Length: 159
Image (cartoon, rainbow, N blue to C red):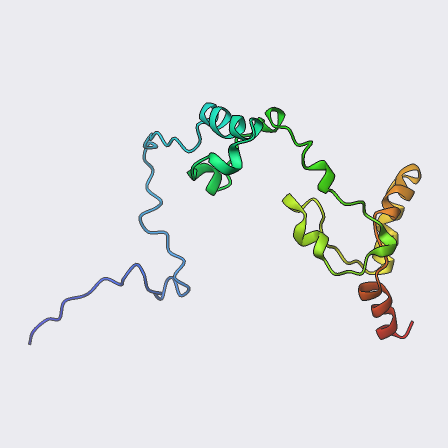
């Protein structure tokens, strides 16, 4: 009779004790942190090369490809060094009565400054009531009752 070797279960497969393979073998050992230097973003370099390039007008056409910019890494606080006035003419006036619910504004607007949100009318009214009376009109003007989401929903509901 020959004894068969007992194989340890693979760490990458589910076991009786861990049927969903949620193991963390090898990650729970207490050791001191290994200190490493990872120059993820050089703030001074960013300010000198990137910000200066755009401020002087050659950033878009002459700056070489940059790893930090490609990864959308921008140091905190650098907005104070940049001039955003050239963007202002491109910001459209929001006219709620003209809103059709096409969502182009949400898609085109940078940094999610405009978020598409649909609320049931009773939920919307409850949220408005939670806002101080003095501010309520301002918030009400920022929402529109579109044909697509408001009138269409009322038609379907028979209201």
